[in-house]
Length: 131
Image 1 (cartoon, rainbow, N blue to C red):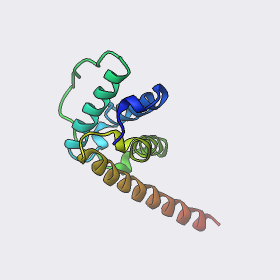
Image 2: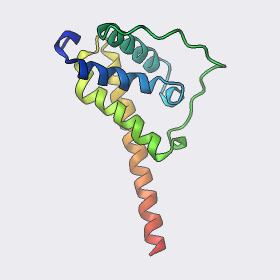
Image 3: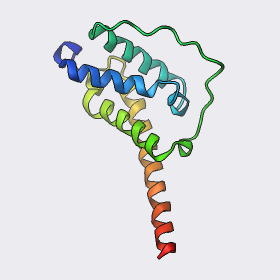
Image 4: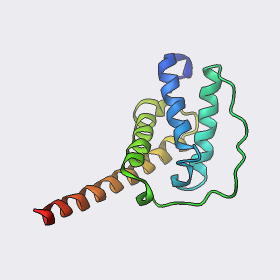
């Protein structure tokens, strides 16, 4: 397992920004279950501390977070979420101190890959019909 001290400032920033994006108001409702967002929040805060950034204020939510299906994401949003998950899984999983976090992220990545493949299949069908 690598420690944060082994990462460059750019690497720490990329990992922080990826985790922060996934738990943002915009994307948190797409995360499966509550544990992933909790662990990502803790990981993001640990990275912020390593970067000597001020910790974010406690969130003030308008109401409960409701689960939303991945197919509600636009293609751009799906690519955005996929990129953040991919960065965390492939480059920073070995810096996560909770063994459940990389596993949950890999499962989420797999769901994102399936969603992208389904969309590609639908697009191919539509192109074939249009020809």
